[in-house]
Image (cartoon, rainbow, N blue to C red; front, side):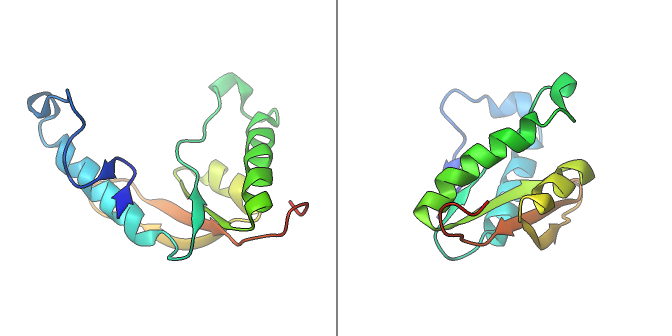
Length: 124
């Protein structure tokens, strides 16, 4: 399986682990818990969806996600992501995502794995 960083536990070329201290272990732990929460069926994985702070609350994030979800729906597959804030979780819920599991592995912060079931194209 391939996690958010690609296959295996090898750091990307050029990454100096000495500069990271113990952070690489946290990256691997985070990647493993995210991978374990992903649905087994084919799905799109929405990684790192964000808008600038000044654009929050303007509908920009919703518009970006709706555009991406149109592509997901055209393929008739599920979508999956992790929500890292209560505000983003509410947005994802409004767009049809449901809580899959709470990701809670010390010392990482608590956040939420969420999946949106497959839909026929045109429903959004």
